Amino acid sequence: MKTKLSITVLALGFAGAALAQDAPSFEEVDQNADGMISQEEAASVEGLDLATADTNQDGSLDRSEYEAATGGGAQ
Ligand SMILES: [Ca+2]
Ligand SMILES: [Ca+2]
Image (cartoon, rainbow, N blue to C red; front, side):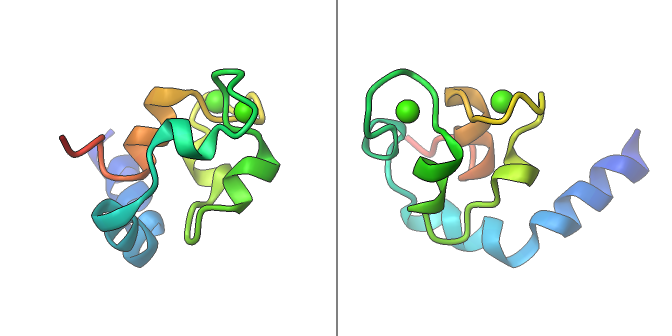
């Protein structure tokens, strides 16, 4: 488990660190307000890798996946 987690953290690497600072909110990215971030919507976020962020691999990002990918929703 720990090894796998470390690999994931490494894979996120630089992009994840950059995203944490000034990623747009979920609502901003979810342009059609359907509660999911599609591949197209995700493409508008610089550095966001949908394939990495989509942890349940359903092809889109829900709020928890998006916030995990962008730094856990710094509030
Ligand atoms: Ca959407
Ligand atoms: Ca997903």
